[in-house]
Length: 249
Length: 258
Ligand SMILES: Nc1ncnc2c1ncn2[C@@H]1O[C@H](COP(=O)(O)OP(=O)(O)OP(=O)(O)O)[C@@H](O)[C@H]1O
Ligand SMILES: [Mg+2]
Image 1: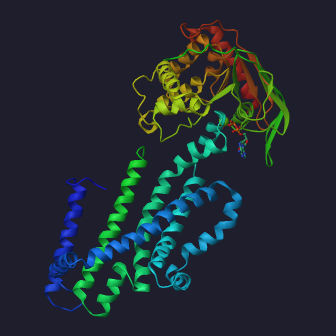
Image 2: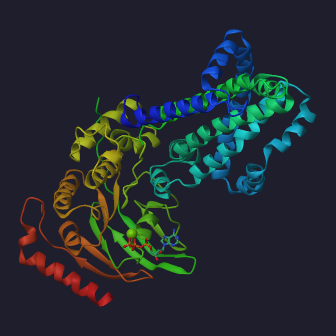
């Protein structure tokens, strides 16, 4: 991200402000009930935050997000490393990963509901499914892209398989892994909303369904904005981790 | 803290009847080379004739299809502690500072942290990079990166130093300075050195003997003795008629190979 005050940062801010202004004007024109002015959305957002609706929903969402995403990240990296390093693992898993990577995962949520019942566990599982594969594939790509010359160099100095893994493959794949984690974090928020909307029980997704069904459009927008903010936060956090870990780039 | 380990005595390299094919490509065919203990051997030959393959076979990175390599009497079956390698493309860890890169070989060989740091600092100073310990490879010039590669190879105090075109990507001026540094280091701590090069002048300037490989499949085509007096780094060897005559002799051998 660009530091605030930089030219790019200022351009970005101007763009956002312009968009908000356009939204406000469009809303004031009263073209449709589905486009409320942004100021009203902001007021609704503030009210929902104040009466605890948003914070309760967001808290539940966040818990599902963490419960799904952390295992997805850890397992995704482990599976990706394994696939990258061992041909047998790659042969066994490649087809599955590719198929599930491009499958419409929302279609699997009913199966998850059948498995877990209508519970918040389904949301965590959906989060996992949405974020897992992109992390696997990016880790795999990172490992496969490791410079052969570095591997030979390490072997000359006596590296065995474990040392190669720890000292060469892992650090070489780290930028790709962190990219996967970033993309995975955004996917995780998507999975969270999809899961919550489908089970319609908890979290921000449930609020989306509720306000949508009851035509409380301003409140609906307030929740959408919250989801966007959450996605932004997740991506920023992942980016910060990336910067902290991959300082040499 | 710097524990100055006595340089282990240099050991000979013996390559006996080594052949190596990559699929249909016969890279080396029945190669015989002996490098005496403490000798500086140059290896020259047309591009793609198997110089790197031979060097990697000695380093234990490539397994020969036939024949045998011994380093100090030990038959090479994999990378061993005697050899270290300076790679043509540097092979530096992009995520590690110069200091960490130089420490890397020591780290893999299990040296304790304090000794690692001290040895690396000493060797970095020796190759003329003092002050650049905390620089990442991307912040260093090609010549400086190659010096880091050399420092890393020297840090483990090997008995055998294998250099694969270490000066290929360096400008002429830096190259000459670097060549002299290498000769000085070599005269300080005698090591058995095998240097792959494309440059006839470089081979003659640095080596005791120059082995010429034929085009693929690589085999030993000729061996040229270089009886120039040492130390060469502080004299004007390059300006002598003897030097010119040796380079010309090498050229005559290589020309017939093309
Ligand atoms: N790992 C490999 N797989 C397949 N072919 C290889 C491999 N390594 C080398 N070769 C082939 O073997 C031959 C000799 O390669 P080598 O790198 O040893 O040549 P070289 O003399 O070092 O060439 P150059 O002077 O260009 O560095 C080449 O034809 C090369 O394509
Ligand atoms: Mg080569």
